[in-house]
Image (cartoon, rainbow, N blue to C red; front, side, top):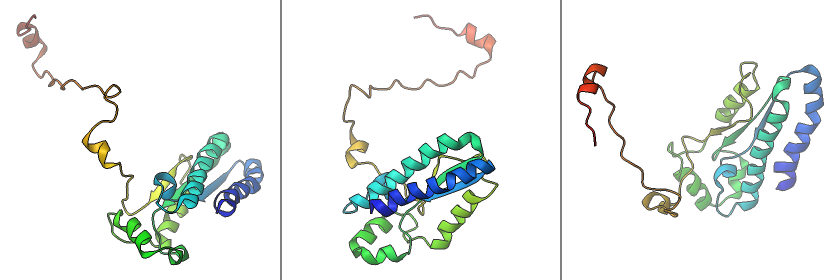
Length: 178
């Protein structure tokens, strides 16, 4: 998994970078995964390598940002490809159940994002990882919503005061001293 998913991306980027630098132009689009952002249970090696692809993409983009080279990644959620044949129905259900569209993506939908990122129109976009996820967003642990873990870090916020909509002349007349 590491050899293909991470080392392969690294060596491919290294192989094309010198010619892109000579031309002063280039587009690199790495394929990561939503699993690299969130992690998926029972898919630790895959999730870890895809997180590495995202980190590699962001780092390389910063190195070549002033040389006319844009480096981005696409992070698909579950897509109808051969990898699904290696997963259990439970693993596939875990992924599609978290997708608001409740379906797998199609390869042509991912290709459309890659097409834009590879185009000259993508001239001010670099170091990004674009989700192609059917609306899937990272989830938080249920405890994060119900209570704060460290009350010292998250102090109670003061209520927001309404904006004073009175004209300036009236504001000075109605001023209350405490």
